[in-house]
Structures are given as structure tokens and as C-alpha cells.
Image (cartoon, rainbow over all chains, first blue to last red; front, top):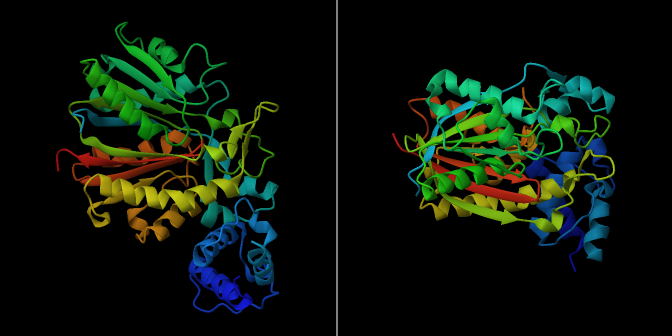
Length: 78
Length: 314
């Protein structure tokens, strides 16, 4: 099972890649919405996380993943 | 490779339309998102009295401004559409045949495909002409989605625009089609569909985006390789203009600069099977067009089709 740190690292990496930002300061509970990530960004981040962690979210709506903690919970359930 | 290919292209883009940002206000979508992400500042709309075949006729008129009426003496007419005139019978190509007073020897048929339709259509018409010892054909794309868009549906209302194209296919080709790769993801067939209950288009944007972002880059690389080329040998990548974000996502995924993967539909909208010929036209008429063009269409099905066009007179 992927650790919370591994998942966090993958999400942060994905946000950096999708938004072309060098620095991403986001707490695990910080909302993506407050970080100016729109629905399309969040879709791309989800796909990038799948690639990073070699997981498949299938038909999951990216709108259900609102913060890093949501990713940790979701990936660890897979 | 077939000796038949693209000789010239005519297009029709209606004058009137809807301002994308104004439409966005209705859905509380800000203009920055419209411009930078969806990319469609203006969505073209056909007149209420215009049918699919009328758009074809206008595209044909644009073609004949350049290649004279010799194009009328064609052996085959193919119309790519999923929104034909009226109830779909007779086929749109038969109506185009009548409206253009084409000769009785002309074979006419429709191809029911969405955003992959132009790439499929090229392959079909070139093969058809060759098989039947014909000389010239006309490949039309005309899919007026304004017929099926629900303007209250935020998932589709801000995306589509009406347009049409008419491609003259002959052995005096400027571009010939190389090998084509086809991919079907029919497990997502419901992702873009017209509801039988409402008659309106319904889109599952997440599924479409996932399919495109994950599958199309792989297919493009495969297609380039199948044609004996390296990625750097391809001068231009014309991809279906589903949205600015999709085009930019593909460019990033393929590690290509945006100049090589242009987004050109901001003033038209996603015109389904017409987005590729609308972009291709300027390169066909230019005397210095790119030597190798990768063309990729993807969407309804879900499906994706990629091909390489090689310039015959570099």
C-alpha cells in the first residue's frame, strides 16, 4: 500500500506539472479550490497522479478529490 | 500510398454566432476560463433555415472560387455528418448532389462519424476513387451541432460551433495520406451521445478528457512511427480542436511547442469533423506548406484516428 507521504509527493508533483509552478505550498487538508485549481486542472492532476502512482481511478469524478487528504484516502482504498 | 490526395479545400464559417463569454455568464463561468481553458471566444451558428447540405454548398462555393467549375465534374461525393438534413432520409450527399446539379454518374454516400470523420473520410474516398477508376471526388464535413445542443447544459453549450468544409480529392494532390491508425474505446460510447428522450447532446467531459489525455499521445507517436518518421520529422501536428485545454494538454504530453500543435478555433468553436480541414486549408494553398503533417481526430465513440499527410510538391 502506498504511504501517505508517497501519495502527497505524487499529488504535489502533479500540481507542479499541470500548473507549471515551481513551488506548491499546500497542506494535506488545503482545498484545491482555494489554490485556484479549476475543474480542468483537477482532471489533469488526477490523470498525472494515476501515472505517478500506477493506479487507476476509473470513472471517479475529480470533483470528489478536493484536497491531498482525499487522494490519500482514495488511493489507499484502491 | 494512394496516388489520390488533397488537391484543395473550401470552407464555410457562418458570420453569426454567440459570444462565448456572454454565454459563460449564464453558467457563472468567468471569461478567463472561457478564453484560457475552453478557448472558444465565439461560437458560430448557422442560420435557422440552413441545413447540413446548405453548409456543404457554401463550402463548395468557396472551393470553386479557386479551382473553377471543373470540380463539379466529380465522380464521388462523401458527406461526413451526424446531423444530416431533416430526418436523415434521403442522405445529405444526395441533397448536396441535387443542389450542386452534379452529374448523374456521381456516387453519393454519407459517413456517420463525429470528430474522427475527416481522417476516416480521406481514407474512404481515396480508396473508393482508386477502386472504381474514378478521377475526382468531393469530401464534405458538415455537422451542425447547434441542432442538438441544449443551451442550458453547461457541459456542452460553451463548446460547439457550426462550420463546413469541402475537400477536392484527385491525383493532382498537394498532400497524400500515409498510414492511418484507428483506436476505439467503445466502453465509453455513452460519453458523447444524443439523448433519445430529449434529442439533445449529452457529454461526460471527464471521460472524454481521460480518453484523450491517456490514449491520443500514444496513438500519435505510434502513427508517426508507422509512417517511418521520427517525431522531429513532423513539421506540424493538427489535432482536433476539442478545446484549447485539450490541445495544450496534448502538446505538453508530446513535449512539443505550442507552435507545432496550434489552437486555431477560438473564433469558431469545436466544429466536430470540420476542425481539421479548417486548419489544413491554409497549408494546402500555401506554396511552402509543411512537408509532413500529423492529423489526429478524436471524440464520439469514443474513438481516435491519426494519420500523416505528406506533401507531394515540397
